[in-house]
Length: 330
Image 1: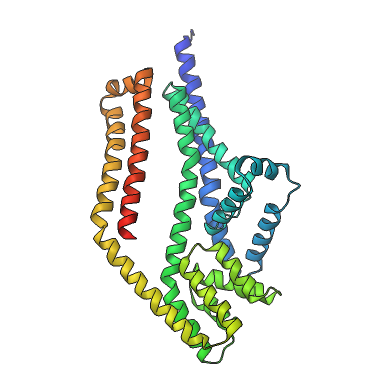
Image 2 (image 1 turned 90 degrees about the vertical axis):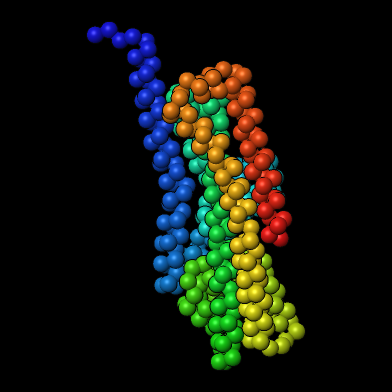
């Protein structure tokens, strides 16, 4: 049976695309799904003592401070020590327990199949590079989204947590025992973080250091107010229970005011999302309904430049709309 070069190229392209999709699925699972499963396992073990979570953080800290690792040295030269520490802190705040080299290796393993899919299916190196780069930066947006969601959920729990802490102190509990009770009564992430604070001070770390460690794991301004109030009270004295009640009242008022502002800006945020999504959806709809019209943008050099310019303008427009909405909400 004679096999034409076109048929052979089709088989090779199909096989490469299948392998790329499999590799992309495995990489996405290891980067996005596996950290969530690890976090759930850690939360379950925290209920039995909290040592596993502390061990993970200790190992991660040792990896970050291991200056003998040539991979860390390479990333320090590329990103800089300050950016490297900031990225590692952001990963902790997103509950991703990986060191920097492993994290970027998984990003690269996700980007390579994306490039292969774009190169073999769309027959364009530029399309492959764009697809690979998009898959490479997508987990970074996921990391930012997960940090924000954790901080928002933590801040929503803050008023109830401060009131429970105040009642515990008024009942005669010490601050460590009140924090232990708070970790048992509150859900994730508040309960988990408070359990870590209690376990750290129980293992010999001072309360101030344990609270500072919690600030590294949660990106919340309200939490900074709480930590500052506790540290000042330890130095100067005062009624800590009353202070917790005042913090709870202030945080609850801020949450209510923020909810009202978000309600007033809901139309603007929805309009921004629609304006961003319509060009992208229209492009892919025409790819399916009238592929011959979109081939000009993909196969010709002029079309590729126009497509790249359109993507850049969408990104710039999204950034400008985001800043406008944030200025209104602020």
